[in-house]
Length: 259
Image 1 (cartoon, one colour):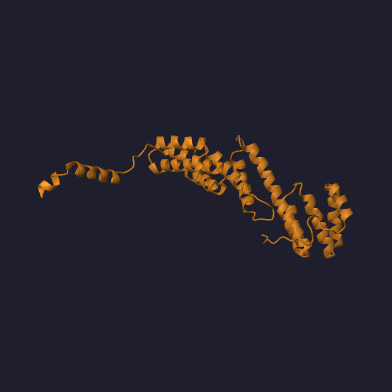
Image 2: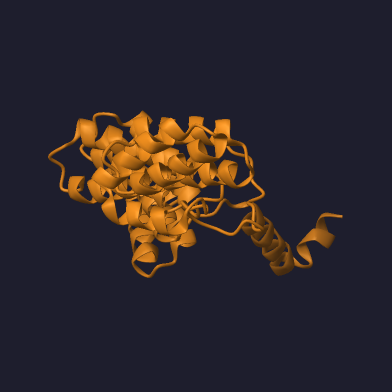
């Protein structure tokens, strides 16, 4: 039996070599190598490949500083790939894990912008607008002197304008569907929440119409005087259109749930 094994020594050795290769683990690279490969993929705009390499840096647990850089790079790769929901989650994770990191202000700013980039129309869910306002206000309160502050202010102002536009949209909807008490309540609340916003011309216009159609002519006259004083162009439009709603067509009502 011993002699039979020795008849094919070359084949036996080859089988042992193949078996060993099949079970050998893939060579492990250093975290620094994975990071460089991630940066190269990122520079080539191969964002998914970059994320995969940066995740390997995280999984190595060998270099806290390099791990933090990889975590931020993952967020940036999601952002540049247009995956803003994933980017927002990654920036938030970075902030929680590294609150004192020098890049924490940048992560907070990008968290606000990620939500801002998810904003669609005023007739859709407004969560992205609310989140944008929340994080951009937080960023400006904590880092008013940041290099990103100017852009954050522009985006925050735009978000507030969008919030008021939504309130006007809802108020106008109630007006057109003859739910005058609801329209009056919503529009008055908007006046309180958004002082100084340009869109308040539409708010006052719709509020005047709501009071007028509800039969409260005294309040309608008060609002008309304020409209005349603060937004004379809109007041002239109101006089020209009479009791016609400010925007939209009566036969095109939005099918959404207002909050």
